[in-house]
Length: 171
Image (cartoon, rainbow, N blue to C red; front, side, top):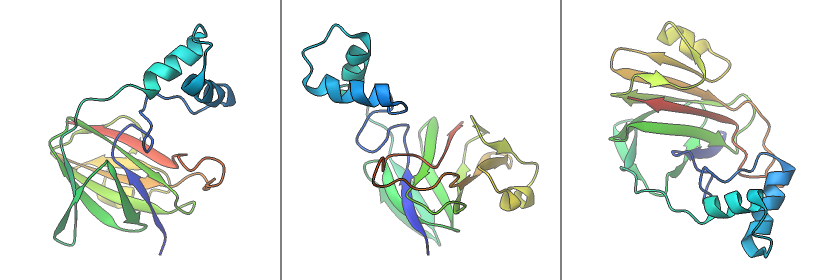
């Protein structure tokens, strides 16, 4: 089956979330900031600050599937398409992102103790969530269910950190 990468933070792999990779200019500024002597450029300054900053330690995350709990280290794990996984954490918010999956592949997540999602389409029932073709979510009392659907094709050679689907859930 299709296996992909699950990211459990707003960062991209080893890069902090504040590092902008969205445009050619931003990627050039990032590369320039590493060894640049042109520190007067505001874009280089912001990329440099983002690149070398450290975020505060996060509460741990565990993934539960078929009754087995897996502790996640480094906010990344591999996941199989078409599976349902419970996410257990004390964090106030969790960003779930998929990469390196076939277009249209999906993974469902159950997040007990969470109430909202910042993006995706809110569904009215679990059945509607299961039928969703795009990233969506459903609130079932004190649990949020999320279906992440890989919407864009993988561009591994060019930018392996491209996220194909992402959603942030909060308590």
